[in-house]
Length: 349
Length: 260
Image (cartoon, rainbow over all chains, first blue to last red; front, top):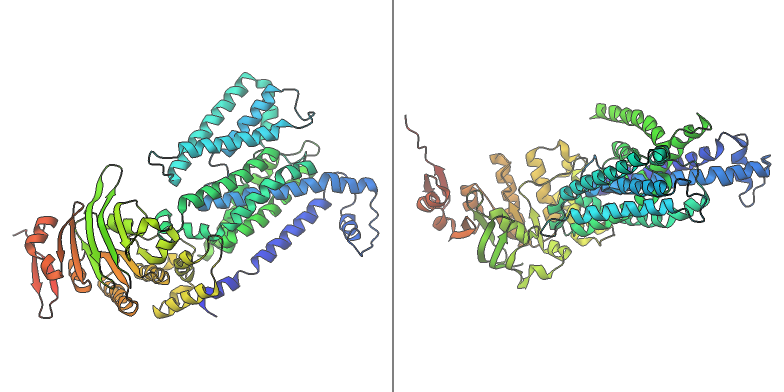
């Protein structure tokens, strides 16, 4: 077999393996919870609900509604948030050619945080009783506005946007939005706890309507990013050489940034700021499958979904009913896991 | 075979002019070598042809201006080997050479079987099979340079731009790389424009030399006309001796000026 073909063959098991890992995580997520049916009855019930199968799982209607109305949306939302943050993080790292970049780089998180703080401050009694909860909308808008400002500020006098000027503008916008948020919190210290719990991220209140709310943005973002995976590989040689190879670098960068930002802003709007996933998952994936974005993007998508589903499980079982914030769990689980991969891989080199 | 013409090409950066005015015609299949001291504008000229820095004036490929073409179409005509190429860590040699096929892959498409067999062919012809499956991080300077040239060859462009292709190489690898370019030029009728610091090698391999100084063309012609002690002394500020061998080869040797 030829050299350039054999590489493609060697990697063909990664995607099926990641799909299996994701399926197992989904099942585990549906089986485990503080209340509800015995864990092993859930898979039986799922089989029973398949066409042409009939198994007596012994699940009551209440049990099923716990599984379907409480656990399932939470598991699905965890998968959506995990996959979006991971693929957006990997794409940002590719387009800025910087491994330390996370999806919050250009100010999405700070903008969304400011938006959420404003909503909570203005309406202390809580907005969840409203017909349409404005908090996710305004957090989403705040995130997008922050990135737009970053993009405009990051443009040099000659109309060029280098990755460095964009990153620096992102740092400035993040500081500004964070400062405004801190100022608001100082003057309204009674809502600090509420804002803090939003910032730390949560999936506990997930419903199917949350899933429906984010799905269009997330699907759009994911499709656009996956379409760019070959071009992200070409960009690895640098802006100049990529341009000489026929890539319109600024257009590709703009498309990737828009798609990644839209996805990130929408998941941040429903789940708060879940740190660590967007940076740790792509890196763990790179250490295992190599550095080509053709594999890194789809595997990050699948593995990121599985990771966040699993990370969400201890949060709801331990410490019940207080619930450990998911952002804390991702860091607690992610950091040692990442160090483990880093150490084992280093020895091979 | 493809010709390349320049009509008052000018390259400006924010604070300085790198190329003031460059007018020339490179014949199809010709090897033009640009020489000149550091900062003379050699690299900027090559970068403007490659389309990575904007220029004013006109650069014509087979009579039609470069700016009228999409970046993809331009990359199908012009392959560029930069002075300091970036070889992304974790990429294998074959993956790197495959990047050269980018101008022929649609925006959201993937490489065809043809692209892959093309890459395998280039790897075979350039005798790079041993590097194809290795991580580019593990390669030596000479091996990396051969891969970069292989990537440019895989691009199948009729015009090849080389910016200091031998700067990082020892004398053996210098000769190997330039022989390779020369052979490919003869086999495929490539038009080559290179910038080089080694004046002797520049004279040996090119058909014609252009000496640039501070953005201007100050001398041009065959090696014997350009590589003269007075000319080099004036624009490089050096003291050199120039030997002419029996076979016409021009050898430039610096004079040692310190005395004991």
